[in-house]
Length: 438
Ligand code: GLC
Image (cartoon, rainbow, N blue to C red):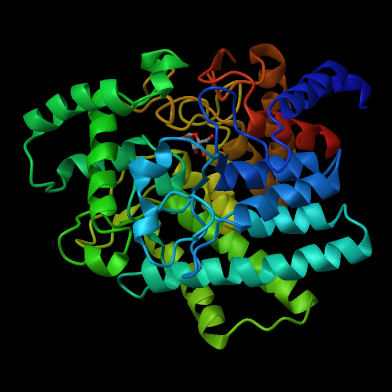
């Protein structure tokens, strides 16, 4: 145990133990009772330091929920929950028959997790685990090109904010407000109030002002109902469904994990198809179309109208994690991480810059800082030669968890812990940062 962070490490281990459900780790007791895609990836990255076999299982559990069309859903449900009825994803013929899942995906961090877990496994275990995972992850990434690429430009056009895992970031909310949902704003507000009584459970576990508000909840719910109605089949969505959003964080994570997938496939001599490699290279190039030359930040784009939503958020910096942009572009992003007026707050990088009119103190993905996004940026800063900045951010993230506890998210000015308590990816990635020697 590293002497410097002994207490913190013990706390992190305690949270992972408490949330352990044998085949997977739930994100947090009470509020999040299923296995989530990107949570499982991050949790595996932490768990590899204490039990690499268990970490591999974490990834395998989420991979088992893969659909025949390649999609890895964002949630694999715990048995016996009402969510399977609400989602009704079994109506899609390619959903798994014996496992209950949701019907949309989440940021594809599994190639990253597989490589890092593999580094800690014995040779034989590593080979078996990695080879199986490569095939499945390649099918998932191919699914993106088949089902989420309406313009053929290689960018993942998400059909629901849940697919980015960063639900109420202001770019998403502002964009969703402008779309024609075939229903008036007043009716939406009304729906928001009613639906929140019926289906929302999050506000029972965390104060309402720290969560998405009712109007946002109504937008999530309504777009979800349309997807459900189309049986999560992108062909049935054509035309009538307005939301196809080329999100920057999602695509940056996709670019990086495409690259790791290619490296693993080369190492294991498991050829990826030329088509897939060609699409991956297109994603890398198209990410640059999202860059605004005026401020050097990257902004999401409506895949239908081509309109960009130029509201800075933490996603604007995520090409740092992708690591595929020219050096001077990455350097410009790296500088933003230390600007005290925008992203350079005392504890971690906030999801929305401090000087933005959209900064909503304490609210979920609309101001607070999250350990997973800090971890992605630390990794990107390090790979792009900004060691000093990576170290600063890692230390402030560790300090934040020391002060605020193992919460879901934090106030980046005060380190106050917010949202759910004893949150697994916070614990896992804090453990990983400690083990990396920060
Ligand atoms: C919240 C987060 C999402 C996460 C899920 C489970 O919905 O926004 O990113 O995967 O909780 O922890």
